[in-house]
Image (cartoon, rainbow over all chains, first blue to last red; front, side, top):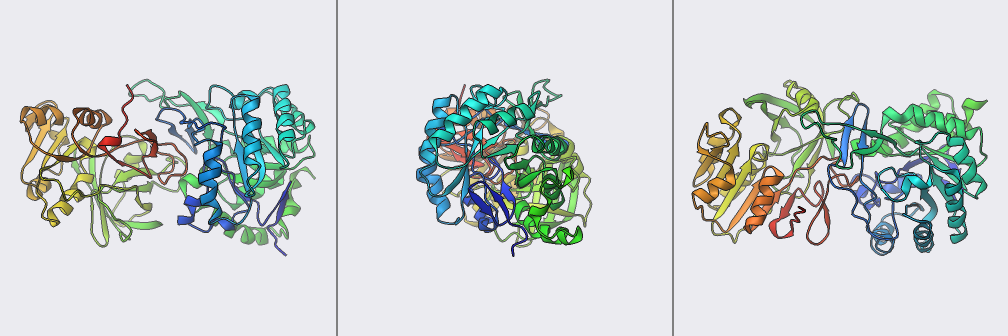
Length: 304
Length: 248
């Protein structure tokens, strides 16, 4: 028996650890550090129909227990992802990957999803309706329940793959949006994306980020993520993937207690390229300590 | 790749500028101009690692030279001999020595001077002759002058305020002195690097950028180049002069 096994729509994971989109590139470069086949799965860099260069630099600013980023969905476009990135990935990765797809309009999302769904390496689509760093699209699809639902429905019709919808925490009522995408056919919900924030350089008096605002990630946002997973778990019946500030095995269990079936690790990978490997190795020891037999037993335990 | 390095020395060598010697694995370093990424401590106060260029290295030691700019480098300056640091080493591409150059010039500005030291040592080891121009704000900011003088044909030091050496920035001094060279290696402020590119000289330039990870995962440090984009941490920090894109 594999104690770490957990199930997501369309994918049975050998463990709940999934590097988050934008913090793991297209995976293969991490082979320099460890065999990425030990991961439950991973979400590749947010991909759009056309190539995007992203925002001007500086794109990164530090803050206590976290960082701000304003990358702006830099990616080579879905065709190049299929023809170059996934070809390189396939040489070293034998599991299924989750494709994070962004866009500026419904047509772009649908077309990109249709294309990426043809890849046999992709096990699920993660719909990015929560990127705070692009002017057109991204988060604007995820802050209105009707727009989020309509896009989810359109994407569901365009693919045979399960669709996970990644939500933004920058909303008045996360439950309302979660319910709307569930009703529209979402197979799972990933939450949360980054919280919008800002830093100002005291010597220049100007914003540190060229984009002025960016997304805050890291341990600073973990309690917000735990709370939103907890809140949404109570109100929907589809699986949740918890993400936000997870740094170690203890954080993983906390997120699963809140209601997550699996977790994504983002910023921790940037501080320590071995973060996911360490967490996977630490989980069984911590489970012994807490007398947890199977990790799937604890999903939503805080609600009982 | 991330390993423990032990602080052997951490000493002030110019105004707010420290030289730190670290003992540990240097076997993966391939080129001068590569950098290391240092975890300041285990707290989340200084959350991201600090990328700092390798000034020089031996079979078991790395020397870095850094200036206190903020909280992270301030904490770094307080490290004591014997302290252990978690470091990713080496990162980035570094300089590639051009053996065809006839008259080589090393150009450094302020905090961009350190990575040129290892380059100077390796040029010297390969019996390749070169001159050096290094610029600082003022007299109290100058470091590595003696080291470069002993390795090069000639080393010119300049200061912006004229308090030592030639007055002016490195580019003005190169022009005023009508220095002749057919190849250069440069590291310094972006403005200085862009000026060199605009002058049309042929060479290699090491860029600086705020980084998230330092090893290619986050796209935080991407620079547009003539043909594509490059991550300063991964395909950089050294770019060839003909590929540098200047957006004005």
